[in-house]
Each structure stands twice: as C-alpha cells, then as structure tokens.
Image (tube, rainbow over all chains, first blue to last red; front, side, top):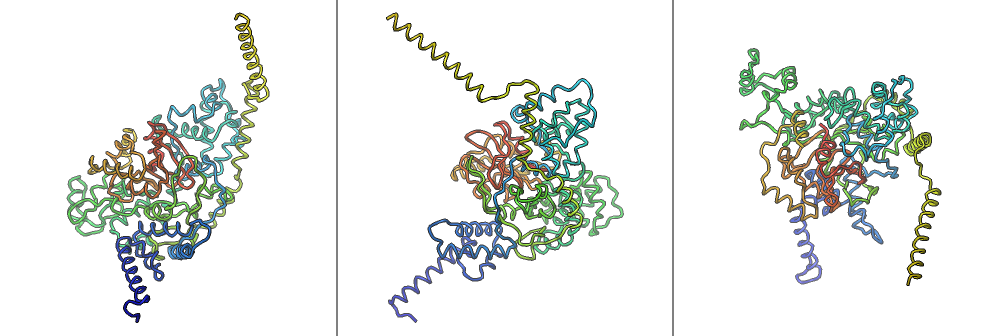
Length: 488
Length: 135
C-alpha cells in the first residue's frame, strides 16, 4: 500500500476522486456510462433509454470521426466501442458511394411509397409547370384523337415514372383522361416529371379542392408492407411487445389496424377493450346495440370490434384505465416504416423502384427511428448539401421489426423470394437513366419550338444584336458630346 | 388551414384535449431562440391550438410540450437542426418540413442530404403540413 504523502498515494487519491466524479456524472447523465466504462459498456448501453442510447451513439460517432493531424487513443477507442455497440444493437455503419438521386426522383419514390400526390397551389402552377404543358392543356384539339396516338413509351418523363409498378398501373387512366379532354398527343413528349404529377392529380381528383390525391387503386406500397407483415408475423410481434410490458389492449388494437388497413398511428388509434366491462356493456346498451348474449369478462368478438370501428363508433368499446379515463395512443410507442437502403442513395440500386421493395423496408419504433437510426440527419444551411455520410444499416438484411436494441427485441422475416424475383425481372425491363431522359426531353422541347417558330435563344445572334445596339448608343453619346463642345 | 383541420377531423384525428397555455408558448419560443432557432410562425401556433403534436403514418407534426414526448419541437430541433435560419416543424421518412425565417417560406428538405425538395410560399403552411402528414 502506498505510504501517506507519497506520490503513489497522491495518484491513488486522484484516481479515486476521478472515479467518484465519473459515477456522479453517470448518475446525472446515464449515457456517459458507455463512454467511461471500459468493460460491460454493452450492458450499460442496453440499459439506457432510447433517448440516451441516441446520445451515446452521437458522442461516440463524433469522437470516432474527429479529424485532426493524428487519431488519438481516445478516438480509436471510441470507434471500437461504437462498432461493438452498433453490432450488439444489430446495426453497422453504412458506406455509400454518394450516387445521389435528383430531387425529382426522390419525390417519385415518395409518391410511389405513400400512393399520394400533393396538388400544386394555384399560384405556383406557372412557376412549377412547363409552358408546353400549360399551353396544350388549355387549348384542346377540335377533334378527339385516337387512343393509339398517345404513345407513353415515347415520353422521356413518363419513362422515369414507369419504373414503378404503381405508375405503370395507372397509365390507362391517364390516357383515358387525355382522350376525354382532347389533349394534343404531342404533349407526352414535352411534359416534365412535374407536369406528369399534375396530370395524375387532374385524372384522379375526386373534388377540385382535394389537397392530397390518392392514385394507387388498391393499397399503397407502404401500407401493403405493414399489412402483410402484421398478417404473417402478428403473433410474434404481439409477443415481443407484451414482453416489453405494453398494455395488451393497446398491442391488439394496434395490430388489428395493421392487419386490416396496413395503417396505424398513435394519434388516431382507438384503443379498445378486449373483454366486456360494465362500462362497455352500459355504453352498448345506451346505443341500443343488442348485447343480451354478451357477459361481463367475456372476450369481445372481433367482428363487433371491427364493425363498430368501421361505423366510427369504436369509442363505445374504448379501453379505460383504473380511473375510468380513456387510454391515449400518445402514451404508447408509435411505429414508422424505415427505408433500409437510403432513398437518396437509391442510385446504387439497379432500379430506383427497388427502394420501396418490402425487403428494403422495416417497421421500427418511432423513437428508435428518429432518435437513433436517423440521429445524424441534419437540416443544414441552405446551399450546404450533399454531405451526409453517416447512416446505419441492419447487420441482418432481413430485419423487419424493431422495438429495442436487444436481440430479442428485433425480428427478421424473409418475404416470398419467388414473388420478389418475378417483380425484379419486370422492373428491370424499365430501368432508365434520369439524365438521359432529361436530355431527350430538352431535345423534344427544342424541336417543338423550332416547328412552332418560337424565339429560340441563339447566343451568336443575341451578341450581335447587343453589339449593334450598344454601338448605336455609344455613337449617339459621342455625337451629343461633340455638339456640346462645338456650341461652347 | 381550416380545410386541413377539417380533413384531419374527417380522418379520425380528434382535436386536442387540453391545449397549451400562453406561458408554454413563451417558454418554447425562448428555448428555441436560446438555441439559435427562429420564432415559430403564428400560423403554425394556430394549427397547434387544434393539434399539438400529431402523428401520421411515418410522419409527424411537432408540438409545444406535447403529450407524445417524442414530438417536442425543442428537443427535435436540438437533435436534427444544424441551421440557425430555419426551424423544423414536422417530418416524414423522406424529409423535414422547415420554416425559413429569412425568406419567410416553408420548405421540404431531404432529411439525409439537406437538399430542398419542395418549397411553399409564406402562406403555404397548410400545403406543407398536408404534404408531410400521411394519414
């Protein structure tokens, strides 16, 4: 043992004091345990709240990415810890080539995913839509063209849309709309992607003031994923959530919505009782619903739950806490569908349509999605773009459901591969390059301008015109000056 | 804005049980400004009177001290906002809805690259919210 007053004793005292202050800091900020502890930091990480886990990840990520002359031991240790923690949570750091998509392509993936398109505000139509589209839509032909005259395959912009199955399915509707309103078939070669979005809005709107237009005829790509996952793996999902301690009434109400509609969000979920309570029986009686056959404590038939929800009377079965207050979805975890392959980086994929494939989607607890997986997403100063490099990928590519960081809190599932391969083959036939399509569109528009004798910008002519104008002005100024001098 | 609120009601979103107080608003504005972000636009505060923190499918509108703590506008901006001219009002899996104080405009910004995907005018909050919220 070190002697009193010796340097070893002093060192020991400092070490003990440091250790105490560390533990004090950890008590205040639990995420620091992952940074301070050299052993068992994975267990420390598992015990953190999702918010603190995000903080620990961000700190380690920052430390490991510090750029200086030389990487310090601390930086290297942080990188090592980060990799181990991510591995334990089922993630790895993704490396991308930066093959970014154009914003129009990102918007197309978004439209395909949600199955909706937003209407352009009236004031923005002139700015956002091409003059060719506006002119030809406003001036229909006298005679109705034949359907065969509308060659969608010749449209460079439509080729970009037709990479997605959901858009290929509505080609016939768009054609019918153009025929009905006698729109010049030439329009297809001149339309920009933005114009096509507007055409879809015009063709699918039910009311003229509808802001969000649904164009997918059946279920959207996003909802289909959630529905299929809940139908196939619902029991395991319920088991995982119940093990985490969530109220079974919430779990089954949520899964029921997912199985039926592929939709669920905590803001509008009606959490229903699973068994008849006195309140439920009384409420049903008040609404004159025959409940003679129902007994207190008996399971509520699923048909009754579904029919009351469909009739917007789900509140009659509302689940309540011990104080009689309705359970609120906001007090329970919400879920988001996460794109496993970064959408912006879908240029890496053979077809951008792959981005929305079921195998590239995952249902994640919303707080893990926002506070951990997308932790490093940042809004930057305008003009500072194309700079992201941090993104997490799942180690197991088949991960489909995540409710925590422990292995038992994530689930893998392989959707039907045979069906997927068939879809791949079809989508592969529609692969096109955005830049090439836009070049073709510019050529088409230039050809249209020439054939319609519009003013085409010609740099040589413009320079000559400017020079002669300027020459005349200068000449005039000289003459004025000479005249002034002479008169003096 | 009323159109959007009515559409949300039709789609099953019940309006706020107990709206926030003026004091909450002042505290939140203070917190945002302290962190260097601009004030929240008045039109957005009007929307929050009906829906203070709202979740759609993979999407959300943030709120002032909302019941769903994952939607707190101050916390969310502290994590995801690296700009001092803009404040994030909502998000989906593709983008953030931001308000640019300098330009007095609303934008959809790619959440991974920060690229501007869509822009809305100063009166375009309802369009922006409608675009971000999938219900």
